[in-house]
Length: 393
Ligand SMILES: [Fe+2]
Image 1 (cartoon, protein in one colour):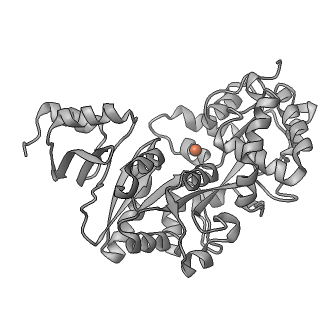
Image 2 (spheres, protein in one colour):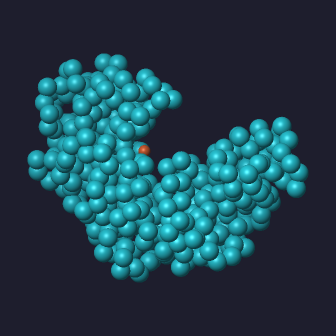
Image 3 (cartoon, helix red, strand yellow):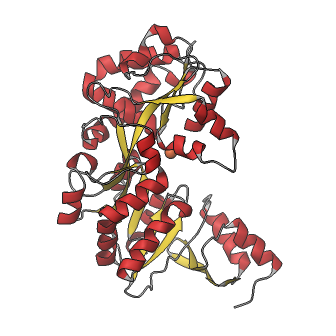
């Protein structure tokens, strides 16, 4: 194995290898084409293979850990859609407690498809992701298996896990309204009210087809029935400031810039903006809004989850379940929720100071399984009302 050259270093940096000791394998159609071992200093084997493999996979991925079918006992392989920086403290605490090494493969997309392609030879033990849409999508793709664990069923409320235990929520996130501190006087709001003509031209919202909004719309169908949900969606569309575009943070920026008075966003983006030293302008966006937790006065604010699923052919099943149970423990819950500005799913676990500072709210108790049932119809309604065409269409 050659020592690091200048080119190797650039490639390693491009691949965003953060951890001091990692082994990386890149798989294409179940064949390992490349293996990199990084110990203390970068040592890279066959840079050309990495580039070839990455290009072949067509994945905009960032690799940060071990994936190797030949792992000995004492390992667990996680395919993660969550960024390494978020999960690192969590997995380190698990390793410290159990001695089991956690190897992480991170990618922004394509991991479920990859597990499917890898089939029975997949090294994946766990799928770590966000949103019930993606968790139920993994189940639908056939890459999960049920887990019977009294710890998981005791610690994770049934509303936040699959009815057949194929996926489990680990943290909850609320879909809230970010209201202009200067221009919005009221301190409470409901989702229903977003369709009120008094907000004409004043709402910023990302694509109706995004998983976060699909879940919210699915919850409206579950609560009000399809006909009323459709009317509501039409009303919200009429109140949009323009064509839906950008991510949740872009909507907060819209309020800051005066484009709109209300933005729909997940709560943890406030944490990301409030603490963003790399892009300090986002601190101003956050400071320009107040967080309103809709429907706290009645059924509660819409809640989604980040979660985990056991891979269908997990080679280290026992260790994987141990990690799942750690993530559902008080310690795991506290570390994880704090790192991602979300809320522990296990009742009674203390919130982080930042989340506490945002205030208490009542959470909707609608089971996520009911949201899963209504997702398809929600997506159809978005198209039927032409939500993404904007208010004037
Ligand atoms: Fe997000």
